[in-house]
Amino acid sequence: MKKDSRLSGVLHVLLHMAEHTGPVTSDVLARAMDTHPVVIRRIMAGLREQGYVQSGKGHGGGWTLACDLSQVTLRDVYNGIGCPGLLAIGHRTETPACLVEQAVNAALDASMQEAETLLLKRFGEVTLAALSADFHTRLAARGGHDPEHMHAI
View 1 (cartoon, helix red, strand yellow):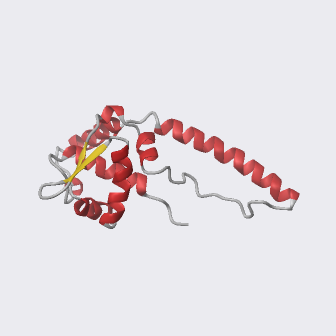
View 2: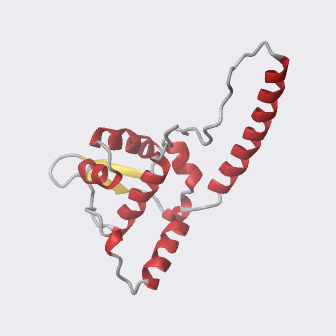
View 3: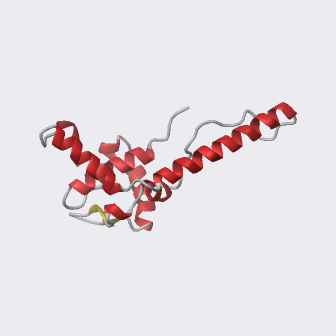
């Protein structure tokens, strides 16, 4: 099963945007996320509705951050992109007649709910500012220069 990398991708571009002065177009963000600009616009629209980014049209337009990185958590961004599935384990049959399968599904449901609750709690504890600080620590450890960080953004 293919993993959903939207959260990772959008966090990546948000942090790049935090390092960039001025608006960034959907085309540029799409290249950084290796996707189509329409996908970027859909993802960013959810973040715009939450007030985390804003967009401008026309020449010189594009996406800019509209938030304080210390006030936005991974959970906020996760919610802003539509709460994609966190875990890929599912049931063989959703409404089984077999009592064994019913027991298996009940155990999986309880465990998965507990894992999702814990993961979302942790997402709520990590801010974009903490991610940015981690990036800057890693950058400083490389002497302030990181060619891998220099995307087209």
